[in-house]
Structure formats: structure tokens, C-alpha cells
Length: 367
Image (cartoon, rainbow, N blue to C red; front, side):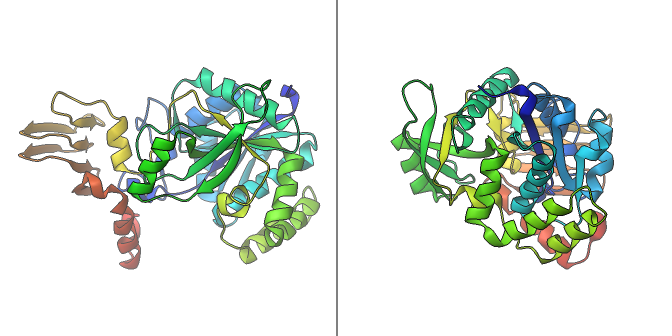
């Protein structure tokens, strides 16, 4: 049984959400958008879920300097020393590793639960129950335990996890992991759906800090060498300088590539809650409430309006102006104070290409 006094929530709060431009911007990424998915921000929802499992003094947040003020605004109960600002962005492996080093220093017996601040979850009580089961599985041995979502359609925008047999007959729904699969083409995604033993990869992991630290050393030794230096420097005069130096020379690695995909001691607990990474406007449309014509319309502020004739299956968000549409279908139309985005829903993942173009044109005010 996992000891609640040793449960730590490691919240990774980075990423600009470029596929949700123009609402998600560098200064206000999707996790800090109000009225985006629920009345509170995705970040605040993440903290509330973590508080179902542990105390606020055992919630560690790894972020970038630009977001610290937003974190303090939306989660004032988090201790300042538990908000760790990365000197530069270096992808998720180093972010998870940095948070793990801090937790290991605070509590060598810790059980670490990774949370991502930009995911949407429904049924919070079920979420907490599944995370507790994952924590109990992690305590049974040297295991890295993930929570996977049973696919409901052939999704090509998420990675998949292939599972095998149950760990044993006495542990409930805990399965051994056979392999990770990268984001598949549609045909392969359909095969995964039909086989029935594949799950969507949520990135939610639970494991002992000892097992996670050993996994970094075994599967990403170069990265681990830097993390060891950071760990030894923590609470000392060279802490910040050491972190800065390691970040400047570190590889840009995702945690999936650095650890999870290589590990041979993975387990999976099937989720019994709703989950979405809200990765692009197509996903936002799928999650949105639809009118009789299949349109998901959201109005922000007091000035936005929409009037439509023969308009079907569109995602429409208005903030400052009136949007009028005639004879349109399957479009994304997003209006903000300074920008209007219009694109086919099926090309929603390409919005990040617009962000790349704006960077090339040095349109900093639009990023």
C-alpha cells in the first residue's frame, strides 16, 4: 500500500500549445486560458486533481520563468520553493529529471506521480482512484506504472501502448507493457483499435523516486550525468549555476524517448476517466458542446457574437467581434483581439506551421 505521506505530484508546466494558436500564445499558453475547457484554467484543474492525492507541500511544479507569475496567481497555496523555473526549455526529459532530483533530495522514499498541466480530465474521483492503484503497483517492486486510455477511435495524433498479461490475478487491472508505438498512420491506428490491447499514451506515470532515478541512469546515461550533478548541487551555493550549465549543454529529449520507450519494467493501469490533451482545434471541436447543426460555438467576453446560415460542423470562437457565416462546413474559425484564424478542421494540426511562419517573419507580437 502506498504511504500518502510519501506521495508527490510532479507537475510539468511548459509548452506553448502552438497548434491552438491564436488563443494559445507564448505569454498565455493553453494551460492558463480561462473558459477554455471548464470555468477554471487547465493548470488549476491539474492542481485540484493533485490535491485529491497529496498535500500542497508535496506538489512540485517545473516550469519556465515566464510562467511563474501565472502559477502563483492560479495556485497560491503552492510553496515558492516548490516552483522550479528552468533556465531554458529543454523538452520533457530534463524537466521530469529536474523535478525528480528535487523530490529525491526532499524524500528518498517518495512515490512520484507525473502530471501534465495542459491536459483535460473528467471524473476527478475516478482519476484519483486510478492513480492510487498505480501508486500501489509501483510499491510492489521496481516498476514504472502508467495510466492508459482505452481508444474510442483510430487516433493518429497520439502514441499507443501495447499491453500483455495482467501482473497477477490479485492486483486488479494492472497489465504488463509490451511496447510503445509512435503516432501511427490511420491504417495502423485502426489495427490497434481492433486488437483491443492497445491504449493511448497519456504520459501519466507513477513510480518510486528510486526506480525513476535508476531508469534515467540506465536508459539515458548522458542526461543522467547532468542530473547527478544537479542533485549534488541542490541546496548549495552552486545550485542555480549548475542547473544553468547542465541545461545549456543538455540534449533536447522527450521523456518518452529518454526513458519510457526503452524501459522493460513498465506496467499499465487502464483509465476509467475521460482524458484529452486538447492538442489542436479538431480535438477542441470534438470535446465542445454542439448545436443542432453540429457547430461548437464559444463566445468570450461581452462583444463576441456569431450568426450563421447553412453553417454546419464548424468550431467557432468569437471574443471581440461578430462572426457571420453562410454556406460553410467543417471549418475552424477563431477570432481574438488581434487575429482571425480560418482553416479546415481536418488540417487543424497544421496551425503550428503558421506559428513557424510568424517566427520566420519575426512577428513577435502575434506569437
